[in-house]
Image (cartoon, rainbow, N blue to C red; front, side, top):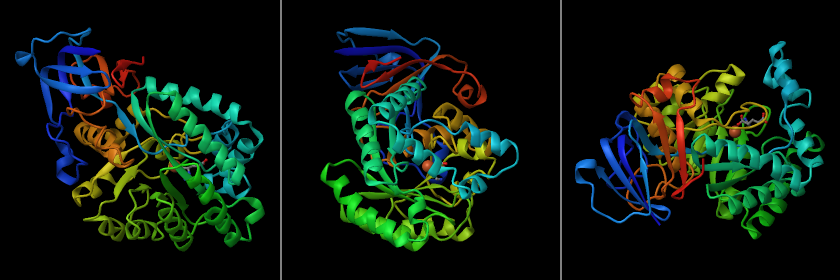
Amino acid sequence: MTTLIINIKELLQIRETAIAKVSGAEMAILPTIKNAFLVIKDNLITDFGSMENLPAIHVDKKIDATGKMVLPSWCDSHTHIVYAGNREQEFVDRINGMTYEEIANRGGGILNSAKKLNESTEAEIYDQSKTRLEEVMRLGTGAVEIKSGYGLTIEGELKMLRVIQRLAQNYPITIKATFLGAHAFPLEYATNHEGYIDLIINEMLPEIAKYKLADFIDAFCETGYFTVDETQQIMEAGIKFGLKPKIHVNQFNSIGGIQAGVKYNALSVDHLEVMKTEDIEALKNTETMTVALPSCSYFLSIPYTPAREMITAGLPLALATDYNPGSTPSGNMNFVVATACIKMKMTPEEAINAATINGAYAMGISETHGSITVGKKANLIITKPIPSYYQLPYAFGSNLIDTVLIEGEIFA
Ligand code: NIG
Ligand code: FE
């Protein structure tokens, strides 16, 4: 099946030769072709260029993109899409003055979601999660990482990871799974942290590895959650089972989690709302991607990741949603891109790079996703007719997506 898209007003994020990621000043460059065509054969991009050089080929399907932009679909490298129920009441409690940390300390927060998850059947969790997945796919997400971490029991964590596996089997979108057993200490282990870490390392991890249920290992390294030392133990154990670390660090406090992540060659360090100079220094000349989650900052009214400082220091930066019931009940990458521009002073070019190729890197799929490159997956967004791609962050409340293609087929 060959599909040809013609008259594309501007084809964004074209990379003739594949790149893994963009860093520092390179992030400001977004290569494009105006008045372009693109050829898809089955699920892959096979050719693209300027309309003047349109080859005479037989096609099964033609899409006229007059006035529209085409770009690689968003790569959302950090989500918790699989969960049960919601936390609307905590949202209202925060409006009335409580903080996220106060709510967690009274047994709400992650433990509230864990209770709901353990009380729900696998079928119920699957049904709720697939609705969210379909929603984000319609919003232009073409690859997504999903974490466990609301089970906090062997059965609960396996249940979540099986739901992620089923979503990956049943939907054309690329899904990567992360084991986040170290998300919070369950109440019964409140005074026995060693006991819970032992459970993660010696009971959960071997089961997860046996059934190949995860690609990555994660831990919430934060005051009141997992210490740097505990996070290191978790990373080390994950690595032994072939799981690369991707960790939650520096959301509320800078306690050395970044340095630990770098030490264990983490694929990414995520959140980074609170960054010290030494944290930025530690990340220089490493293979670790930094991931900012601006809709979490927005929803919790906490600081935004200091993107300008980090990009000036030469670091790469990716953007993701953090879609979860507590800190970010939204999986809209378009809003993430807009908020990064509006609140973090990223340019549209930087934000689009961060949400495509760098997002792909942060989940280990930049060879197949994140740019318009021959041989990569035909996971694409076709916008509505717009004057320029600046509209994407500028018109922050509008849905500018016309068509979404996943693996070469129209999804929405
Ligand atoms: O990335 N910070 C840790 N975990 C999630 C939120 C968890 C929750 O509140 O349910 C996050 O923001
Ligand atoms: Fe998260």
